[in-house]
Image 1 (tube, one colour):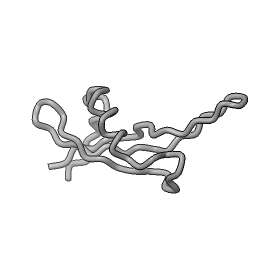
Image 2 (cartoon, one colour):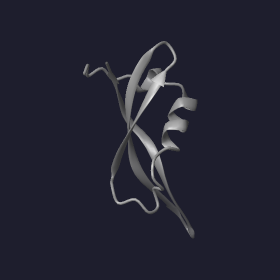
Image 3 (cartoon, rainbow, N blue to C red):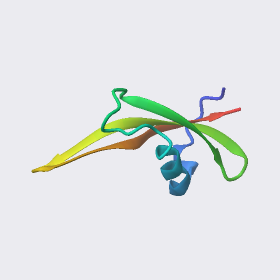
Length: 73
């Protein structure tokens, strides 16, 4: 495994699709989750997502936000 950060090279559509494969962030207990994706151009990457909580007034929302990505062989 090559430890090269490639998060900036991954299109938003691919990141969004990977986040949808993760468990519901509101019910999950893990802080970090990972998903493996294929990036256009023949690169495979493992994206690490962080569970994030947003609260403003009465509105409260949990979601996954991309934290880092590493290229894998």
